[in-house]
Length: 107
Image (cartoon, rainbow, N blue to C red; front, side, top):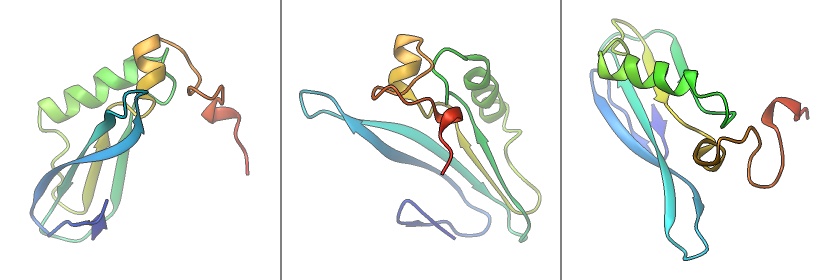
């Protein structure tokens, strides 16, 4: 399995950084992607929080799942991203910086 250009081997734990944007100072902004892969094959589960910056409960739930190590599967892979919409989270706004609401995008 390959995520963000990194090979994720069976039985491994990885914390990757996903580049999201750059500040006006060109400083990169990234979010953590925590990947736990069991030795045995199985389903892949994505736990994603912070899509809407003003809905912070999911952020804490994903963070706690990782802190308590509940994200370590016996089969398959668990991918945890505590905050996706980092700008919305910092500003407590639902939308992304360009005004889009991810729930209202259908293509």
